[in-house]
Length: 133
Ligand code: SF4
Image 1 (tube, helix red, strand yellow):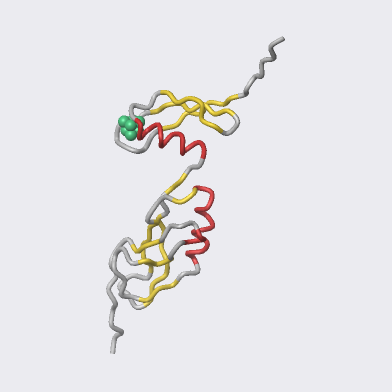
Image 2 (cartoon, rainbow, N blue to C red; image 1 turned 90 degrees about the horizontal axis):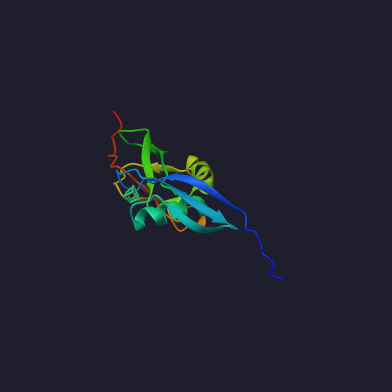
């Protein structure tokens, strides 16, 4: 007698955001593994969709406090996408960060945030402002 094991699978619709074509496709998952993709026009889209359903990532953009500059908040960005589930913890971590002007675009503001292997960098220059005499 041949026993057949039925594997439960789920299908998720995913909108690809890699390029302006905005393909919408499906990803079928069984036991945590992607077993099928459909509707994506290229390999970059298939890779994005698989990552989106198994380990989604996002680029983090936020601000940190800056002293002595033309702005009171410094825009910052993650150099690479971070695990989506860690974004809130990274934002909480950055809420405690304060820097001193001047700051140059690309300067590391938080190195290897939460040990995730991603640096948070300034996304613009902020010049120092001399105090009024
Ligand atoms: S699947 Fe390919 S062509 Fe379609 S949106 Fe994604 S990257 Fe663009």
